[in-house]
Image (cartoon, rainbow, N blue to C red):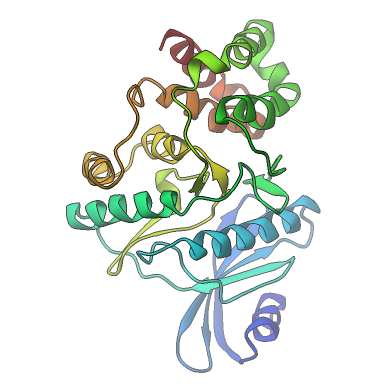
Length: 288
């Protein structure tokens, strides 16, 4: 029996009939497993030689899924079947073709999830986005200073070499001018936090969200992430969202501001390939 299968059996309390590799993601190996009662599960396991932060990140992912599930009235969030510091087990979700109807239902469901508002920005667990730590210290006040201080500024030291002096100064301008750039105040929303298209699963039961960097944040962040690398039927998602929970004026102009953080994460993870995108987002944010 493989180590992953043994870990699944321990977490679920049921024998594993079969398990197969399903690729890798950063510091984790992915598996598809069939258990004794006949249903299938998805398994995300920390590699044996992975950085210790990989286990902490997996713990944050499980905590985020459970927390999002508390505010999920539309079935967007898969239930955690089992989790520990080395393994996360979720139901296996069979893929389906993206559709306009599923997109509209997702837009309405996302609006409802965001409205299940926490009391503060951040979250009661150590945060990660992929393998990059993020400061989830619960914080009250307005979103702009929180975003500048808890998201943008902490990444500058790690991104500085690839950004170069001019890039760093540009991000520092965004941080300094955040009060003018952030838009009208809004209460914290219960957000996914890493809602790019790769973290949406289109299934025959609608859109499901996975791999969150969940926290109390600004709802525009999730919508900006959907636009960052392209999402099927994004226009239908946004239209349904707007009907359910209209956005504040200027939200389209603030998209680059919200995209700046994940682009800086990409600079930290992948280097100078993403410098141009991060600089362009900062410039667009300052022009808005």
